[in-house]
Image (cartoon, rainbow, N blue to C red; front, side, top):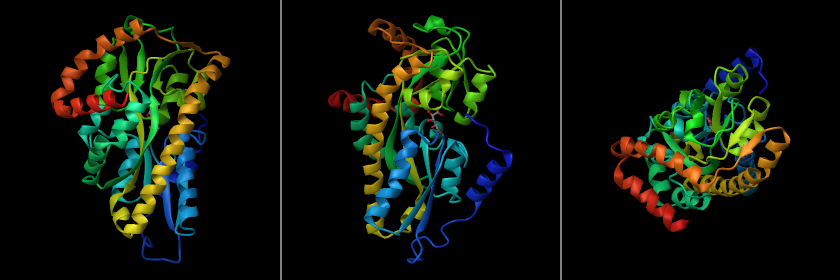
Length: 337
Ligand code: TK8
């Protein structure tokens, strides 16, 4: 990951902090500016879909909206950019849900290891009742969820050795997202987890302040983690969405027709995003190997050892999440699978 100049970073931050909504729905002659913050780079499906969202809006209602998409956490990492979106100094953010569980603890249900058996099950849960309920909870926090994009099934990478069992994790310092379930799960597996924002991960691996991290295949490849990590294990331990959020007051300032337009365009861009993401997910394993990475597929027995080791995490968080919600997700996932 290239380091941007401090000046450029400062400028981007300053721009993001400038008050917006001056015109919003009122000034019909000027397009409404929608800046979208992304933590990933310009090749990631979530970035591509954010751009697509703008294109769809333009086709459906030319001149009404101007979407500007920022990559590489230029407008702040997930937590910071989401705070800016809540406050209204930024219009939109595409963020992982995991670092936002402080805002809406219910989202933790998605972080439970191995709760999703497949992408199909994740689609059913997120596009179904549970996804709507989670979205409704964000509204109380000043955020309107427009769509669920896919970050995907997370895989472990590290620079030390091939990992096929929890025992192999002993002593490995693994970066996690800022999320209590992820921390507890990696502790239960015997690793030494350390939370950190995404934009700091590459440098931390390069400087060996951490041994590894976990992210879906598209991110591992597109962020060139293979330059600093020799091993990927296809653990698929957690499925995470990227959620597309808008400042709620801004959303409410639009006419019902425009609100529907925004939701439709976001959903259309999500379908595109998931398709591209799944294609990259299957294509890039070979690319990682071509770039010198050892990519290890785990047998069902080996996966089971990881599942057994994280089982205590379910008990630890059952009350905080609510047993009903966990069972609801499990039932919807099983029905779809
Ligand atoms: C990008 C993050 C990233 C996530 C992480 O802003 O932090 O590891 O997987 O995609 O949301």
